[in-house]
Image 1 (spheres, rainbow, N blue to C red):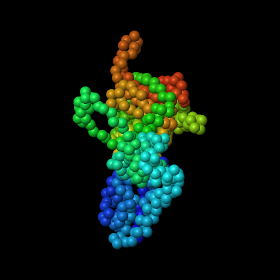
Image 2: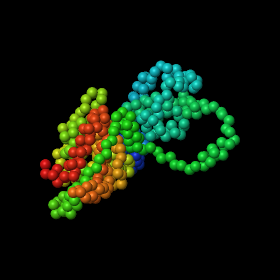
Image 3: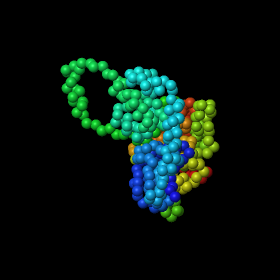
Image 4: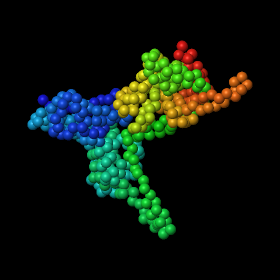
Length: 433
């Protein structure tokens, strides 16, 4: 009996996934455990393995398609088996959506379809193209045909632009060239050589990935919706470096993981921030509240080949230093592989981002809404301080705290930086608590 393979749900927040590559072709033999296809969410990539054996009888979605979760993707069965009913059922939901979209279309749209193209292009109906959610297939068709996406009416799942929406634009003659109607202006002779030289400049267009689009949208929303301010401080890292060296030397004997400076900073943040509830919080403007957390779910900014990801270390304040180090490394490795579960990319109450290894002395980290703060960790520099009347060099590590001034003021934020610096300077005492 034939089996329909559906798009898995990867986390409660994921509504659709993009098929990136088919590993099997129609007609191929399939064994249990064989990889059928790979797919990705906004921030993670996965492989879908077969749980039945047979032959891949039908592929219902192509590479690049944005498929809603729990929707059919392919059919596995025996050669010659009648799967027409299964294919029809698989395609039925999309057909029903199309019919509903047609019924819900405004009367003026129907009239515009019958009117000349010039009468079906009201300027007031334009939309912000950068904010559109569009399937890869629809985007390719729009680029190929020069369709004017500012005039599109999305009818796909969750307001997504799909291929039929582009075809409707083309049926109405709504292309960029038809909408622009540029005036023919004379070009001064002196300007022609400049234009010719500019045309010879070489460049390369790099297509925006779904991860890059997600990051761009989140960063823009953060900076445009918050009152962000950054404070910079530093602390004497002498004892921290000495303890790190001792742990590294005795790690194997004590059965400890490779505890890094970053692990130690994460540990100190998880203990210090509990006394500063406005920073271990979410600013929920619509609800009119600041949601202060009683535990610490620590976001860890990770640089990956696909872009910046921030997995969450849940319950960080309840972990020992060794446990935190091991779990943090698991999260970071999963993020770098692109296999981190989507549910682990949300829910943080505070975030730490470390650019110290790249030689950054201070920077302005951007808050991940609705969090109220983010800590930037900088590199170590040699500085001088007076000890018993003498100038003494010491290793100073920089810290950059960005906070939402809507949620707290500068003095409370500065107190957190001060307390964190004290705890890091006396890390051995912090472990004894």
